[in-house]
Length: 589
Image 1 (cartoon, rainbow, N blue to C red):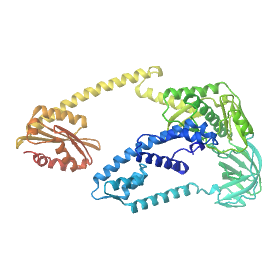
Image 2: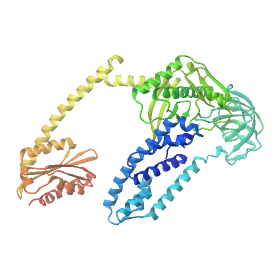
Image 3: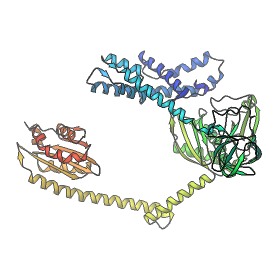
Image 4: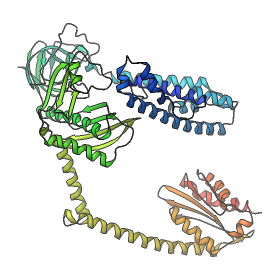
């Protein structure tokens, strides 16, 4: 499956692959194999199946995918076991709820049969009835999502275009065409007329509009007749090669059969072509820098930017990204002619042209060649010369799936827009820190940061003094009860300040038990400390804070001497303060 282009994922055929791999890996565990092992079987499979040469060609990549998936599943199992153990420990009955089982299975990928097996070992059962109910609901939601995803009437799945011949596409060389309207679709049905304001689908006999395919978006532009004008907002095609133009009638009215002039938006198309050619240069650069295991795993080419997904198993370093970006720009600066040719697929392979991983091709293919740097099978539109791309700039790099990375980048005017935005940021920053020019911006920022650090230290010193004065007053006024002094209070303070306050209490009074609440905006903390004499009498900070934190919807614990906890509901602090004394005295022997 991997040799045929399938990648492990959470949907479709990728999900089938993931389930197969995980089931095999789990049975390995049941046999006592705790480390990844399936990837070691690849060589045997390749050897035993010489009739599938692609297995040998993709051997290194297949090994990496399987090993990566095994390692990922091992982490899932470890996490799932920890969560399952926690669920079992907290369960008051010998039954794992359907909700817990579904969460483990759906969110964390923990197999339901493994959940049942562990439950049986612990003498428990699983509420399978509820689990199946939740699973059924999830499948219904998924089906609904798929249905809605394809529900746009303009896709015209229900419209029969059987009598219409395949659209003649001339958009590789021409951006204008004299055409004839062959069909008009409105609200999912064929109509004979359309007028101003109508949202329609128009089918032409000849079109310069490229239809969305291979990750390249469809063209936009205009279609005009003698009596009407339409704005083309998108273009797609069906499996029979009929191009459908999604339009809004902006002027006049027309009827089916009218002659029309179709014109692609030049600026938009050329921006798309710049980005598409840059995507080819990017793939070639990735393979040169990272290795030949890099394969395209998806792409989106629009007028604004390009998005390129590729197979790789770790994040790219800044050095790698810069090297890749420089390689692409070097090919742009060379001003290389971009050549496209249709040829027999075997001839294309001999030239070394790359096919889209997992894609099926006919006997004749279209090849896009950029000198010796890049040769790819591609049906998209491209710039005539790399120099017309202008510049190439990577915006981001990140993970989109296990073993799949994504790069987003811009070219041409997109790079200028980025540089303009950087210039605006620099200008605004200069105004904010009162820098006289860009050259001294860095030194002014460093000076400002150092000043702020010095002021923070001064504020910290003053805060400590104020805190100590407050604590001194509380300790002096505290009365001794059963051999201890209870110091309690609520302050506007963060966790760090509360720790300073505890230090001061313990410094002043060994008989003290300090229970201090601190609020910092919507957040709150509790700090408890027990002096040496209080500890001898049985006081324990960790146990005290556990009872107090329960009163404020918090959770906490700690050592006998000190403990910290968070406050869940700061509105309950006042009522909790009133109960502190009784809680503390309850620990005194």
